[in-house]
Amino acid sequence: MPKASEHKTKAAHNRQFLDGIACDGFPDWAAVVAFYTAVHLVERVRAASGDGHSENHDDRLAYVANNHAEIHTALHILQNASMLARYQSRGDFFTQFQPEDVQTRLIDQFLAAIDAYVVTRLGD
Image 1 (cartoon, one colour):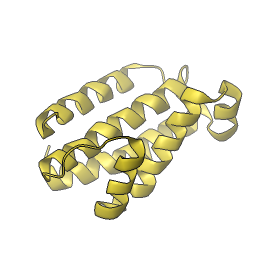
Image 2 (tube, rainbow, N blue to C red):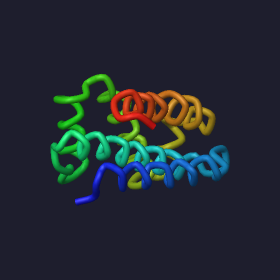
Image 3 (tube, helix red, strand yellow):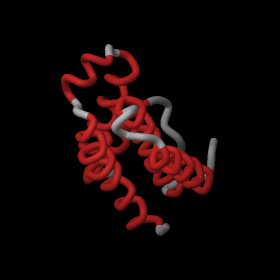
Image 4 (tube, one colour):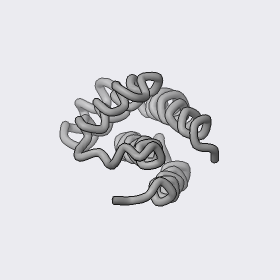
């Protein structure tokens, strides 16, 4: 199982990639990377708390709902956007998310909220 520090490193690596891609050119992939960045932020908190590691996305979402309700909605929206981007058509994704929404809502609002929550609890 990865340690909290390894999740921190992976989240930072994912965020660096996210910041380096053209969100307006690849908003669907930006949504996916935003979600997986959030995954490692949440797993960092979970590992630091001694609560083990999530078995899957549903387990992680339930853990957050039960233990970190403040970020549950943000994680849930990022998860849904990622699944839509990965498993549905591009048209389905763009029906729900315009390119600017990916940056302003998914990244700047929801991912930023999860990041701030983790930093508040564990430090930078």
